[in-house]
Image 1 (cartoon, rainbow, N blue to C red):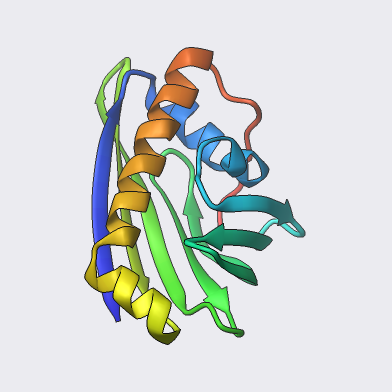
Image 2: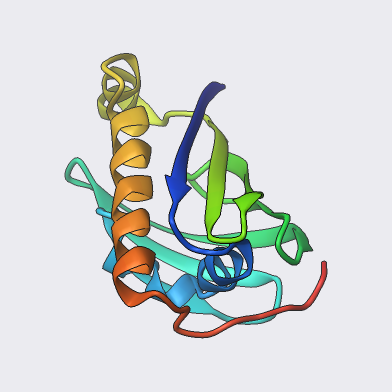
Length: 149
């Protein structure tokens, strides 16, 4: 298993940042390689990705969700083996630190080489920077789900 830990500080209140993060279907707007996400139930999402020329479809289950604090998930079956958590830390009334941890098991030669070259880490760093830009430019969330898992 490989592990990536990255964070970004966002100039938006924690509630706004958290609420936007719960809008999984908006992820393709700031995550490179994510073509589509369908929210099938409160705890089940279906992902379609294409990263480095490798296409994948998989389901992910939200295993823990605490408003304004954290969202944790794990991939269910199939080729994709990953689990992660994103946490939200209030820095002050208008600033939030977003921390993402991802554990994943690269599949096949291309993914293993990409892992050794730091491709996933760079991908996540870029995605978090694009999320920062996305939410700061909007200044408000596109929706919210305040339920707890």
